[in-house]
Amino acid sequence: MRRREILAGAALFGLPAAGAGAEGGPLPDPALLERDPESYWKRIRDEQFLLPDWRAFMNNGSLGITPRPVLKAVTDYLSQAAALVNDDYPRWGYETLDDERAELAAFAGCAKDELALTHNATEAMSVIANGIDLKAGDEVLITDQEHPSGREPWLLRQARYGIQVRVVKIPLPPKDSAQLADLLISAIGPRTRVLSFSGILTTTGLIMPVRAICDAARAKGVVSVVDGAHMNGQIPLRLADLGCDYFAGSPHKWLFAPAGCGLLYGRQEMLERLWPTIVTAAWSDQKLKAARFMRIGTNNRAVVEGLMAGLRFLKALGPERVYGRVHQLARMVFERARGQSDLELLTPGDDRLYGGLVTFRMKPELFRAFHALCAKKRIWITAGERMRVATHIHTRPRDIDLFFQTLDQARRGST
Image (tube, rainbow, N blue to C red; front, side, top):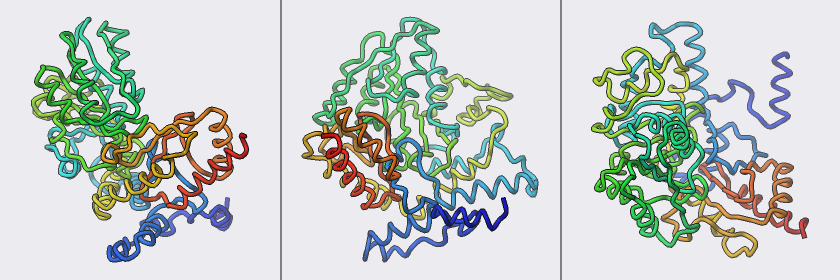
C-alpha cells in the first residue's frame, strides 16, 4: 500500500498518521486545569493518546491505553536496536537494569533490590506461588474474588503437590474495611502458611485493608502475598507501607505502560526464601537480590523503555492529579448507577473503598441488549452480567453519558 493510501485510510477512521505528532507535544499548562478542568483533560486525551473521537473506552481495568510518549519510546528503541547504534545489548533478561529499577522503586516506595521486572502480574504471582516452600497439607488462604492469575497458581500447586487451598467469601458490598480485615484474619488456622489476596479486587474495584491484614498475618507467622495488579497507577501506593511479604504488579493497566510489563516485589528478608521459576546463569546468586528473578533469558527491552516512559508520563502529569481524576470519573459512574432499580451495585457506597473501578450486576436479558448496542456504538466494555466500568484520564464525561444513555435504550428495547 502506498503512503498516500495509508494517510487516506487513517483520516477516514479518525486516526493520526503514523509518526504524526508521535510524542504528543508538551502537556497543557496546569493553570488550565485550575481554570477549566474539563478542557484540560480533553486536551490530554486529544493530544497525548491515539484514541479516536468515536471510541468510548470503559475497560481500562483489563488493559490500559498506551499514550503517545510511551509508544514513541517503544518504537524508538526497536529502531535503535535494529540499527545497533548503541553498544549495549538491546535486550533484558540477563541485565539487572539498576537505573530503571531504582527509578521505579523510588516511585513505588521500596528499595531497588526488592523490585524485579516481570512480564505481567500473572508471571509474578506464578513465581511467588511456585517459589514459596510448602509441603503437602500446608494451607493457602485466598478469597472468592481473586483473578484467575491470583487463584490458579495456588490450585496448580494443590493439584501437583498436595497443598490445600481454602477460599474465604467476601461480602459484596462489604460493610466497611474492618469487616474485610476481620474475615481474612479470623480465617487463619493452624495449618495456614500463606494468605494471598488482591489489594484491589478485580471483580468490584474494592480496595482491601492491606496493611491491617498483612500485619495480622505476620504476627501469626503467615506469609502474606498481595496481587496488586490494579494498584500501581490507580491509587497512591508505597509498597513498603503495605506490610506484605510479596507483591505482584501490572503497570500496563493503570501506569500507562505497554503490554508485557510486570513487577515483582519481595521484602528484603523474604527474598532469600523465594525460589526462582525460570532460570539461567546466576539464578542462585543471592547478592543479586530481586534481580535474580530477572535472569530469564533474552527478552524485549523496548517494553522496559515503554514502562519507564509511562512512569515519567504519570509523574509529569502529577500522580495526585491522575488519581483524583480517575476517582472523580468513577464517582460519576457510581452516582449514575445508584438508585437504578435494575442495577445491583457491588461497589461499596463509601468512596474511600474504591478508586477507578465500579461494578454492578444486571439481568441477563438487559445485558444482552446493552452489550449489542455497545458494540454498535463503539463502547468498549467487559462482557458479562457483572458489569465493571473502569475509568482513566482518557475517559470523558460524555463517554459516561453515552454509556448510561445506551443502557436506557437497551431497557426500552428489552421490555
